[in-house]
Length: 232
Image (cartoon, rainbow, N blue to C red; front, side, top):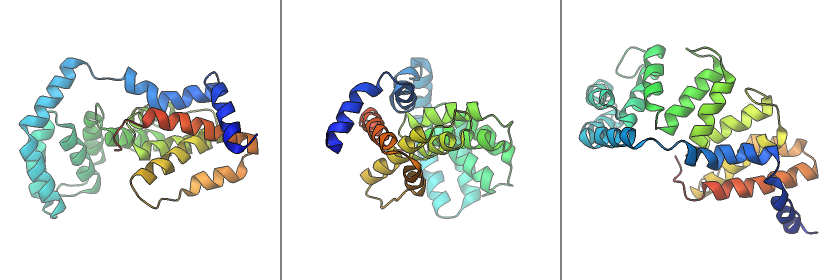
């Protein structure tokens, strides 16, 4: 069989395998399972619309380097539940931009934003994986990475790749590590970025031909689950 036929043949088999369940969970399952309840969604939309101008002016100030002004504009929106503003305040407290650097305050804002913002979900995952400002908890980090990956967050896909490569919070699995690293590279391609993922190449060099074929099949199915999602 040619390479395409081999992949097509394996695609018909992988749906019953544990590895496909892991890919499905990250790339598709949570998209359906984690929809916010209507009441939460309505409140979030209200907060975004009511404070959209504050958020917009706050970000203008941030990119202009006027960090203290940015904090003043972003804080009312964040306190009202605007996840975009909450995440940005997390970034600023993390870096000490316009405020005294405060990892605990950054964590609190990331945690609030993580209800809906995939960037904040990745920030939570990174801290849980490293034990930075919060108890070291790799399985909890994996949960956050999966939620963000389900929203096509490319950094979350890298986090999952590293976790499976190193066996942090999940059983070590070189095939799944390669799948997530490679899906990330493919998604970057949609953004016309010349991204060459060192991790993906290093993993491929360690894999057998059969493992690479299975990874290709899983990537195609994972990509299909992410097709209709905007990149974040």
